[in-house]
Amino acid sequence: MKKIITMLLLVSLLFVMVACDNNFVEKTSHNLETYTIVMSYDHENRKVSATQSVKITNRWDEPVDCLKFHIYANQYREGAAWSVVTSGYRSKAYPNGESWGNITFDSVSCNGNSVAYVIEGQDMDILSVPISSLGPNETVTIDMTYEIQLANVLHRLGYGDNTVNLGNFYPILCVWEDGFQTTPYYNIGDPFVSRVANYDVTINAPSEFVVASSGNMEESTVTDGITSSRYTALSVRDFAMVLSDKFEVSTAEVGDVTVNYYHFADSDSNTTLQTAVGMLTYLSEKIGKYPYKVYNVAETDFCYGGMEYPNLVMVTSNSSQYLVATAHETAHQWFYGLVGNDQINFAWMDEGLVEFLTMLYMDSVEEGSLHTMIKSAFRNYTTFVDVLSQFGKLDVSLRPISQYKSDSEYVYMTYAKGSLLFYSLYQTMGETKFFNALKDYYNNCKLTIAHPEQMMDSFSRAFGSDMSGVFDSFVEGKDIIGQID
Image (cartoon, rainbow, N blue to C red; front, top):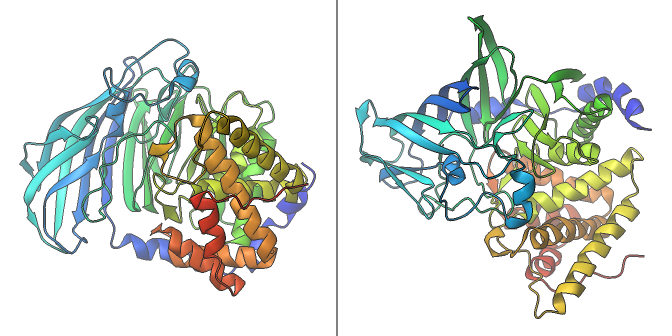
């Protein structure tokens, strides 16, 4: 890659020049939920057994008598009302035929006392835990033991020939917003909204397996062929792992950040690693320094192009898009990871922005032309609209993922049209003000769940004029996209 080597020579200087107080991660951690998980992976039976303790403080300004957790692992069970993938991805996700998984609980307790928990939700995907009335600022500890049966599915949670993907595997507290939000596991987009929390996770696995994980490894020991590794993470939005007995690891340093690439089939693994390094450097300079110590990229068996988690991203194996996927998922470390958003109702806030930032980065390292990539996005979007409009009225608004009829409609609207929204802002504001807006958005909303109005306010402040009309026109589906020559 023509400019990456030059960029790498500037990495050390960059991280000296970028003055950024990263204490916000540690400071924020003082008031967060804390998850402590001890888990074991049984490779022969493809099962995960775990004990989990969650310390929760009521910060919702009203008493509650029940806590609710998403149990996304139950969506993989036989008989689920909604499959984890749409029909268009079924054959790719299940190359060996249909396979099922689930989560079962042995016990759930509150402050040491067993409780009569309930599995509920629109598709049996919510764990409801009754508790004594928990007033504002009061704290409770929920303990649970459970077992996850993994499906043979190339998905966020499941196993393939090369990797075991452990994404969204553990029960996670539902976000509170006028009550616990118990939204289901939609099979289009990323159906997750979560607040940052602290994690202390130990995994016991056969020693031939290498683990790529969120967080920092604190210790690792080997006993009778089982490796026990403990990871901690402060102020992260989620926690995930990928296991493989085929992984090789390539490593680079970006200032005080260690970047690891776990791979098994990538024939140009060094270039993929340098793409992660390059994008991490680019956004640290343009928006705000990456505040964690470790960033891991894992090549995985996966039916989509990639998937983002804090400190860890999955990039699909045997893909022609290693570089683009790595750059895209790395950008998600800022927008989804550090600055959260409601990915169910406002997916364009992170996906559209990240798609455009990927274009800017690829242009900066001469691995693509911004004009060409935008023209392609414009052509793909308008062709999609033209074709579907022949079959009746087409909704071209940027809307909740539950309202898209297909994967392709979601992609063309959220990624293609979303990137055109941010390109329009970039063209109107110029590069300096555009990135000033993102810096403002980042500084005001990091480690929170941002709302569209907060993003609009940042762009308006940076430009010196109200920019909400540009956002509204794209989001509401008004046709303001002009021809791109």
